[in-house]
Image 1 (cartoon, protein in one colour):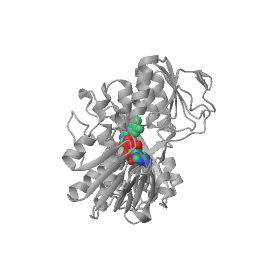
Image 2 (cartoon, rainbow, N blue to C red):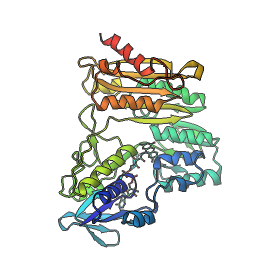
Image 3 (cartoon, helix red, strand yellow):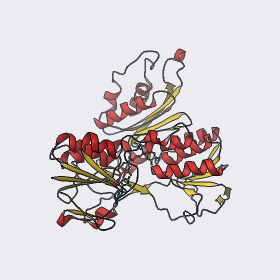
Image 4 (spheres, rainbow, N blue to C red):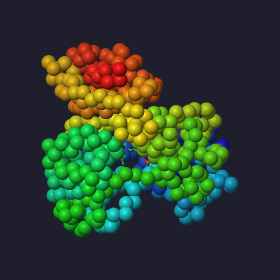
Length: 434
Ligand SMILES: Cc1cc2nc3c(=O)[nH]c(=O)nc-3n(C[C@H](O)[C@H](O)[C@H](O)COP(=O)(O)OP(=O)(O)OC[C@H]3O[C@@H](n4cnc5c(N)ncnc54)[C@H](O)[C@@H]3O)c2cc1C
């Protein structure tokens, strides 16, 4: 039996590797249109910044590794042009037909094709693939640009702004909405604008870009433009084959990653999943989710029965040394979803002051009627990841704030305070709810 996988990065290779672990006799073939497989796109901004010196450090496995160690054939530089599901064949550019019994579609996402005129000018870059990063780095080294405009203030735009600023460029960020990190949270937006200002990055919210000129954007002169206006799921191949997309525009799958076509699975940035707080389909394309979805798709394609229940939308980003992390819903988002959100925001030291504990901001959001936790934000320099993950675990388990307040969190002076900032925020929230 042959398992064919389209896409050779996070979701596709997780699927292939998991299938191989479960079934040693499967014939597994991965098709990847690019030259490079299995790389950590999440590390690309750090290559631009300079902390990662050699981009090869970002490559986890090679096709040779997969052939030798996993008995998986990874073909690079081949693009799947169409899927003929009734014949169980994928047709490649050039006409070759590759048969399959089970198919995993892991075609990822692509930068949003924004309608802004000027995106095809030579000084406009995206930072989405390994090759994008190589091109951008080459431009930085060869042309020594002195100023840049970043369009979009989601996590990628802010990471790019940080990386370029650290390369000595004057950086302006334009964002058409009033929010940053794709999170409707005015307080968070204000904090980030102030933080960027401190590092001499001009972040202009509520400022749509009408056109990119050859040496300026909205009157701000620049030698370089980074487009980071979000991504769209790569679904064309699937849609042409009769695979349904959901209301998010990504491929609709069940909790086994099965599409509407028997034996065809989809995973990663091309597929949607369920948001466990709202119970609705969601499209929040991230590497963590892609790997998990891929693993489940691979397991089911190999004949096992595994489930991926969904996400709570946890994300974290470091901007000039400060961690910004969010999970679940902000108050605004919760209101739109029909909850009655109540939130508390506190600032407290992340650990004992005599261990140089720095102030951490924690915001918790809960529903007035049920006291269920709906979301949280953590901002700080110390243990931001640990704290947001604690909130994410509580959201996964549909915890009420009453129980969250009682959580037995670790304490010793080098790590935390006796009243952890999470518990202080929970206490404040309880006061508002009672
Ligand atoms: C700069 C950057 C930073 C990021 N940082 C983070 C982070 O800090 N944390 C986090 O969780 N996530 C992060 N992400 C997101 C994360 O990298 C993605 O969610 C993840 O790579 C998605 O994996 P995927 O396998 O679904 O898709 P992709 O990684 O996009 O891989 C899909 C592959 O399919 C191939 N393909 C598409 N169509 C075809 C076809 N027709 N035939 C053959 N091959 C095809 C493509 O060439 C591509 O290589 C970041 C992304 C970027 C770009």
